[in-house]
Amino acid sequence: MPFMIGPAPIRRTLKFLEAGRLALKEQIKIFAVHYNLHDDNNKGAKEFVFWYLPQIQYKNPDVQIATFKNLTPSPFIRCFYESGHEMLIDIDNKSKDEIYEHLIRVVGKTKEVLEAESISKEKKDNPANFGVGCDRHCICEIPGQIPCPGVVPLPMHMRGKYKYKKDV
View (cartoon, rainbow, N blue to C red):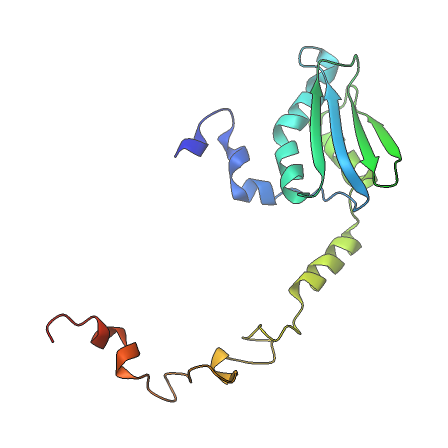
C-alpha cells in the first residue's frame, strides 16, 4: 500500500485521524502555526505539527490551516476569527501534549456543544430513515416499495437464482 510509506504512516490512517479531540469553535476561520525547524525551544511545536495537525485538519474541514516555518524567533499559534479579531497563543518550550491540551481548553468546542452537535446530526425525524428506533421498521412499509420477501415472494425475474441460472 503506497499510503503506508514515509515517516509515521499511522498518521494517514482513518482511525488515527478520527481520534482527534480538537474541534475548533465555529468562529475560527484561519489557524496558523509559526515555528522554526532547528531550535530546541521549537521541538514541541514541530512535533505538534507532525502529530496533531492532520487530526485538526480532518476534524475541521472549513478552517484554513497554515504553517509558517523559519520566520519567527519563538513559536506561536495565531487564530483568526470571522469577526476580524485574532488570538495569539504562545507555545515556546511546551511539549506537543501541553500545546494540544491548551488548545482544547482555549479554542476547542466544549463537551456539551459536541454532544449537542452529535445528537442533532443523528436526527431521527427524517422520513428517509428506517430501522430500529425510527418511524418505519422496514423500507417495505413505504408506499411504492416492493413488499418484504418474507411476506410476499419476489417475482421470478427479480430472483438471482433464476436470473443467473446458466443451464436453462
